[in-house]
Length: 166
Image (cartoon, rainbow, N blue to C red; front, side):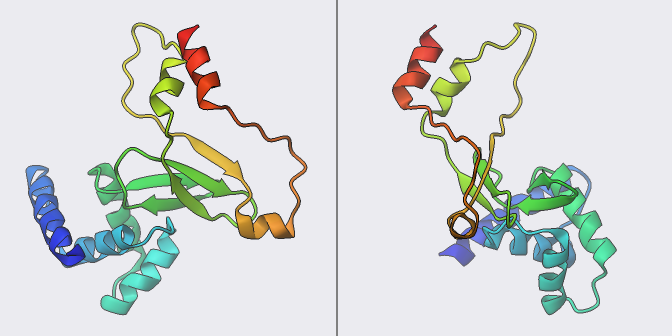
């Protein structure tokens, strides 16, 4: 079933790239498949090592250029985490949790996202294109190793609704 969905996705990728005057080369297809099949939000070096298992003579430069092209084409997302770019094959609307100790990135969907967005009034002349919310803290593994000394907070759904109404 996943392979069938991938074929459909690859066909739409071919059409999308063709509309921009580009082809879906073997390198582009392999890189896109690798990023889409992982949920770890890998960096270019990890992707390069995975691609080399399938295309042994690929260069790191090709991987970087292809990641940029796929990002610019909207086929994957790039997440800046300090000096390191991480890549996400999930291009649907979602947000991220990032561990500030080990760098692990996980996807999160906000249940009260609409109320949260309505709580903030944007200037009338502003047209929103995208919203990205990043949460930084400690993953469960790192919590055991490092007791955070920062103050954490949590907003309940009713507090978000009250803010949206005011």
